[in-house]
Every structure is written in C-alpha cells, then in structure tokens.
Amino acid sequence: MNLGRGYWAAFDTDLLRVAAVWRGTGVTPRALAPGSYHNPDRKTPGGQSPAPEPDGTVWLSNGIYPGWQVGARPAFEDPREPAPTPEEIGRGPLPVSIGRFDAVRHVRNGVVLEYTAGAAAVREWMAVEGEGDHPSIVRYFSVGPSREPQWLVLGVKTPDVSVSLCKAPGAHALLESIPMAVVGGVSGDASPAGADVWVLRLAPRSEAVEFCVALTDGPAGAAPARRNVPTEAPVQRWPQEVTSRITASQARAPYVVDHVALPVENPWRRNLRMGDIQFLADGTGVGDPRRGCLDDPRAARTGWHGQMAALRLRPARAADAGRPR
Image 1 (cartoon, rainbow, N blue to C red):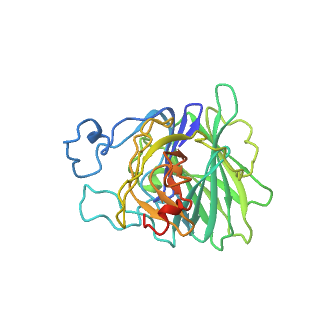
Image 2 (spheres, rainbow, N blue to C red):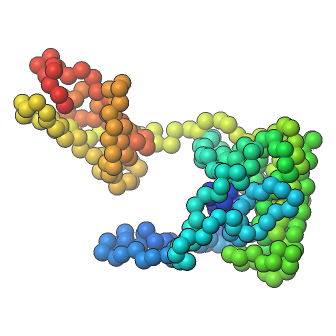
Image 3 (cartoon, one colour):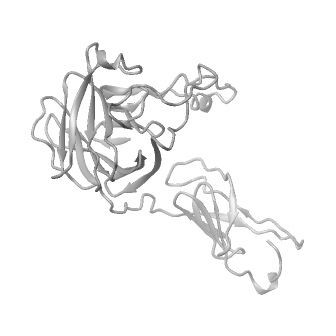
C-alpha cells in the first residue's frame, strides 16, 4: 500500500500480517507475471521466484506467521498445512477460527482493511503522520469484543525505529517485545541478531476498543493522537467519459450481433479486454473492464467510464420490435 510521502506497507491478506514497512520507491519490478509482458513466448517457471521486494529502507518486517493470534502467548509458526511441492510456498488463507480477510474499503483518506481476528471484527487504517525529518507510520485500529486475550504481532523493527502506542480510555492494550532467543528465530526477516519481535496484547473485553501503533524513524516522541478509522466515501477516481462507435448489424436474421468498439484510446491509459458479459434483469449489462452507457442499441456511439463495462439498453425502434438481440 502506498501510504504517501515515500512510505509503503505490504499487508498479507492470508496471514493478516504486515509483511514489511519501508521508505523508498515501492517494490522492485521483478515478478512472475511481468516476465511475459515483454517476451510473450517465455513460459513462467514453477515456484514463487523471482518476487517483488521492497525498494528502499525497511523499517519493520515479519516472518511467516499470523499477524493476529489468540491465547496466552503468541506462536511464531505457520499453522497452515504446507503445499505438496516445496517450491510452491503459498498455503492460502488461515483457518476461519484464527481469522479471515474480508475487504479493502476505499475511503477519502486511503483504504481501510476489514477482517476478523478470532471472533473480533477489525477495521484498520494506515497513515503517515507528523512533519519534519521524523514522521511516523501509524496503524489505527477499531477492534470488536473478544472473550479471549488477543495478540497483534507488529514485527521486528530495525534499531533506529521506535514503537509507541496510543489508546482510548479503558482500552487494555500493552506493548511488549519478545527476544528472538525466546522465539527461536523468525524466518523471512532481515533483522539483526538479537532483535526482538514487538507484539501488542489486548485483554478480553465486552466492547469494541480503538487504539493506534506508531513507527518512527528515530526516538519515540509524544504518542500520536488517536484518530477514528475513517468512513467517508472516496472521491470519484475516474470522472472522465470516453466514447466509442457501435456498428449495428444490417442482417434480418432472428439473432444478430452489433459490434461495440472498445475505447482503446482512453484517459486511463489501459489496455482493455472483455473478459465476461452478463445481462441483468433491469436491461443493463455488466462486463470487464469499464462501465458504459448505451442509450439506444441502434445508436452510433456509446460512453464508457469507471471500472466495469455496463451497457444500458432502451427499447429498440418499432421496426425492430420482437427482434432478438
């Protein structure tokens, strides 16, 4: 996730963890799928390598274990069954009893992550706060009730980064660091020997709680002010509309095909494909990847906007009444 001002976070929707937080230019342009963009005859190899990596200075990282856990103490191991092939490291989501990712919800100030941790509903929002040379990356949380103690595994930070907590009155949240020697080593991180895994403990509770955790490059200053997880709807991302031509069939057969041209030249600078089309009961059609409005099936042009393709049909001319299309 691009948090702005050159700060990034990678959230693992399977393990409900922040895999890494860093400052830089995003991720390296290396991955399995892009290899075929420039060489379409190249076959994607097996396994999960090469993979994108943080392109910049990593502040915090995590191993391969759940980011949210319940119980007396957190466990730093993967509870999922391994894949039958060693090089295929993906294991899919956690058991529902541990947690499940629900949605990425766009809001006016970014995105809110919605998921469940144990039986508690979680809404999380990340933002960059503060000015000057030492801004903070803050994770804001709203967490539902839980009968069991919960653990938020924050990760292994670099020595120059500090961790601080802000919480609402009555929120029984406590920061704690667990030495790597106790953990037995955390695979998949680039932390120095002797580093600690930072965790946050939430006590059992009958009501929802709100709190935030801040990462700061430098000594911890005053705890960040607690803010509510935003709910405001986002502004329209693609307000433009483009048009393309419709070539109506001249055939008089029972079933004919009208050709609707794709808006190849578009302000989104996207290569377009039609992956699927579904016609709905209200006379609209939904497909991929843009939204269009076709006011008359005999019209010469149609408009396109948004993320999906939708064709809105009105009754055809009287001469075409009863003619399937």
